[in-house]
Image (cartoon, rainbow, N blue to C red; front, side, top):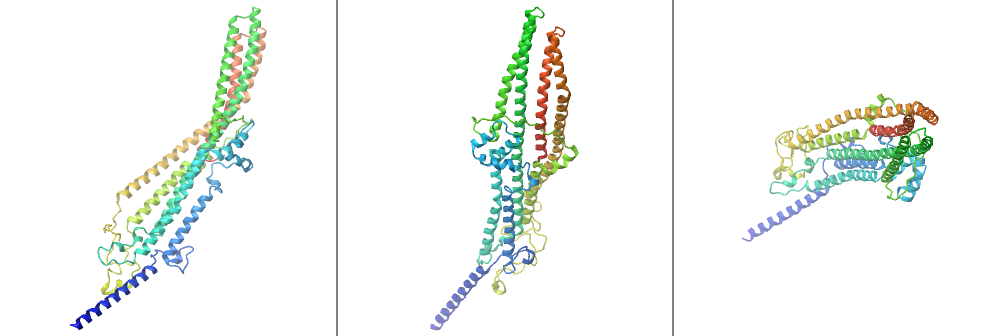
Length: 511
């Protein structure tokens, strides 16, 4: 009987010793485990042969993402010229940098005689819409680090769970994470998706800059027109006052009727009222300037320096390819298409089986996975679509997956929308070029012909009326013609600047 107890005790001791040895082997296995890599170390740029393959693959992909994030962050300070809508002259921008957060300095820069370049630089430095778009872009760039952090967590999880053996149950803990979230392949795709999002956000930032700069240019040229119109109408009011004096003299001498005096007074009062309207319109435009440069309502905005816009009209044929390449809406839509294409590729990588039978793919298993104590086959005995826990085993499952079909249809919609925007861009370029060309032709017509003829008609009719050879109706008509001709000339001069600003907005770049 004692021998039986001795044998039982010896058996228990042996079992306990074997259990301790198994635990020690398991502990060593976990500490030495590294997740597998799908590509050899020598094929990875910058790979270190002394490090495990999985570390090389992960670190190389992570390094590429860090470099991409750094490039996008530097784009705010050192952007590529081909991605910019407008770049101000540094000789104008640098002295105005203190005005970026100083209202008094910005107000001082917009006193009498400010140039369009000064207004453009202040808009870039102070516009709230540009600042909001900059913040959105910086937030999008942060997604690069989120991608790397998520994959780092998954990588660590794989390292600590792959070698565990529960011994009982459905063995859920042994499902290899890299089969559900394979890296570095999927991690690289995530980095490319983040890159496309950053590119779309950058184009959104450029669109904000473009809209703000275009609004500033239009406000400047409209302000130039109103200022000139005020002077022209004020001069015309003085002319009507002199004409009214002549009409009174002729009426007192019995050479004309009282109706002529009344007509002159009516025309003069109408002009006085138009002067009030122009002054209020000028205040509206100055309010727009304060909005663009984010100045308080009471800030004073001076008058623009007299500046004639460029009359150069580029050939239409050269503008179509330029707009196709540089317009921000097209570039942003292309980035969205690229992002969705990579999303579909990532979804197919994670859901669909790869183009291999997986007959030679195996995990880093402990030695005791072979022999009589083996928990599962060392090599795959069958070809399966996925080895993830709970996922279907049907080959090529997911080809018609609902989510993928939905995303593919959205991709087709984005591509169709891109084609639509490209077609609409052609029309926008044509219309904007037409407005600029018309403004140039009409400005030349009024400057070279109409204003000179109206001036001559005014002088002749005034002398003729004083001598009684011209009727009062003809005199009034000549005054109104002279006034409208001069106002139209100034309007067409400003339209040159406005039309050029609109054409550059459509093109997505400054000419």
